[in-house]
Image (cartoon, rainbow, N blue to C red):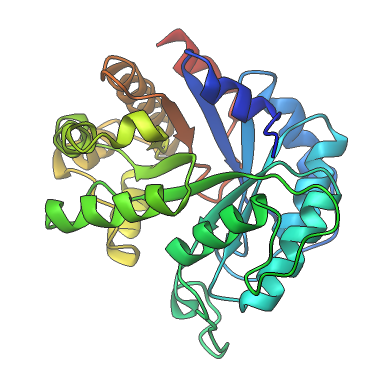
Length: 301
């Protein structure tokens, strides 16, 4: 198995890694993907392509192929909410045959949180088992032992939420993902760097940061209302009240957006000083954020 993508190369190196998120729309038009590819420039090592994150959208596989046409390296996202192990393996084989080199293994938000409450979920396997399945495929076999005809190699990613308590169980779950075969970990968005460092020190103490590249998630907030809604809808978002109040005090919508961008840049500047942290992952928040502005602010910070 040979991992030769840009993200794999940067993980093997020493530099600070940047990945970004793209959330496909509910349609077949690839013009938004082309605009996105042009906006992000050459800074990101790879682009996470969301898998029906907020409801039905263009598939992660389809949008990943479009990004490849525009010269960007995608990270295919796969959620176990929507597929059983047959479909997961089939889609992974197809993705590998088309040249996709990275996969992020997720369970996915419950369908009641994405506007598809009438849909049945699957959850045939969980995200840890998905990581282990991809690792076995990297070794040339399907789950049932069938030999894969042709090359198959995927850099394996998983996610972690530094906010989950108790810390001990949080770390145990993360260790399981690394032991199953995860090469890199992207975290939920960080808004309190001091609290994140407590989690990361536990990660380092367990030796996890030496076994996989940890990328801290960041999200530029557009408004105080958006921040409050995120905390209400998704319990895995923890945004300090003082930060929300700071954005609210900024004034009108444009002023709040700029304040959110400034906070994001400040957060990244602090994260760059955390020993052992390999980089950041920038969430889009599902909006039409100005990626050039985001990356420029972060680079300047």
